[in-house]
Structures are given as structure tokens and as C-alpha cells.
Image (cartoon, rainbow, N blue to C red; front, side, top):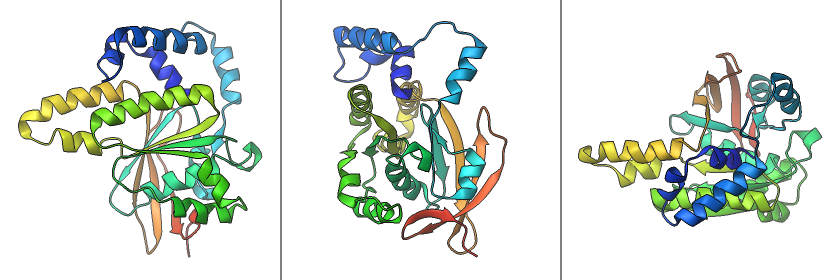
Length: 250
């Protein structure tokens, strides 16, 4: 629903700027998205009631889940931080937990994974699935994967993801990493303005909640909320194990 809403709020000009989307196709996409998503006025009481039905996904760590109240579906969460802090690990973790029943911290849905840096590892999903008593092969079947090779291709895949979510129950979309290909495609100093323009198009489809990840002691890592409309700026400690993200190791 999050991506459908972003499409519904986009302008026709923004959609046409994406390679492969004609004016006619953009009009059809906008019409379909706006029919599925209410983009007009509503009451604050209705907003409160709708948020009661929001599904949140477990990260695998009780401490992090307590910090975030889970990863909220229907919105976009940005992970950033230094190398080896667990950003990609958490993405893999969520691809599994999103398939769990709601009462176990899942979304009872599939996952979409757009990989821009070649970091996707299906065997990692199988190891995490074992922790939750899930069949590894079934978990893999419920993850739709695509490798993006340039920034234009990445934008096309994001639009395809929106269409797929309209046809089946997907609880999660992962883009790892969201900005790497833009940095590569527009690497020269003279292309900085063009890169910022393309990133602005991409960002127009996204609403971000920012989480900074950093290294702690040993295998422990620290997650800090740095940008959120509802969460206070605070931290939680977690660890990276063979079976995914878990609470901190003593």
C-alpha cells in the first residue's frame, strides 16, 4: 500500500520521466492508484482508527522491536551507517519475518528485494528461516528478487514492484542500496546537479524514517533513531548471528 500511495501522489510528469512509462501509461497508473488509495480529506479520528490496523514486522531483536515498535508496513524505513553494521543483514531478516503470522511479528506476505550491489544471499534466508521453524525452500519462493544494474533500471523495478503488489500480498519491499547506483551513474563533479535531480525524482516516491546503524563492542551493533515523525531519538543494541539479527551478546 505504501508504494501505491506514493504513485497516487506523484504527478504525471514525474512518472513520464521514468524510462518506459508513456503518457498514456502514466495516466492509467495514476487513475488506478488513486482509485485504490484515498488521497482526499478524512478526519483525524479515521486516521487514528486506520493506524490501529497497521502491521509491524519483527526485526528478530526484542530490544530493537521495543525501540521501533517493529518495522511499520505501509511506510518507508531508511537504514544507513558504516560498513558491517548489519544493514543488509536486517534486510535479509525482514524478508523472512514478513512471512510469519501477524501474531509472531510477521505480515503474512511475500517480499520484494531489489539488489543494487550484489549483496543478496538466498542461503542467508534459509538459515534465518530455520530459526523460525519455516521451510527454507518455501521462504525463497516467497521472495521476488531483481538485480538493478543502473539508476534507470532501479526506477523501472520500483514501478514494477508497485504493480506486483497490486496483484498479490507483499508485506515488504527492500532496496539495497537505494542510492549506490545514482552515485555510480553520476560520479563526476560536473554531474552533481544531474545526480541530485535524479535522486529528487526517486525521493519523491519515498517517505523516510531514518535509522543509523553503528558498531558496538564485539559482534554487537547499535541502532539509533535519528529521523522519525513519531519515535523519540533513542538507541538499542543488537547482534548479528548465524541465524540473523538477535539481542545483544554479553
